[in-house]
Length: 90
Image 1: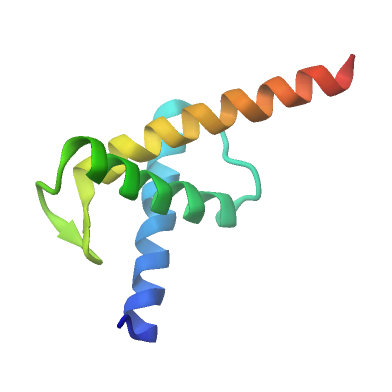
Image 2 (image 1 turned 90 degrees about the vertical axis):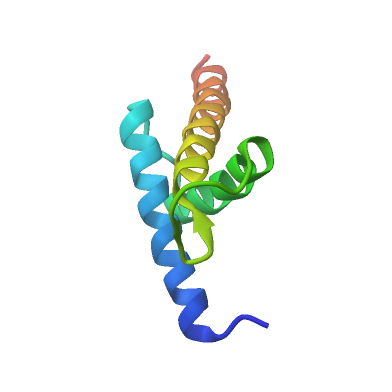
């Protein structure tokens, strides 16, 4: 069972990972900080599943796989959102 302080810490670390991911990709996540949190947490999950649970851990997340996963998530989401925006303009 996760307590409230651990949950808040996890959200903060997820947001930071999301910001790092979007800074590396050079594209913004939609929804601002909420998008960064979602992208960071989804990236942490994806990176851990693809690359394993190695490297330093913060808030129970392996930092390096989480950042790599966030890069993948930000890139894919920005491609999908960008494609939807370009279709809606025409």
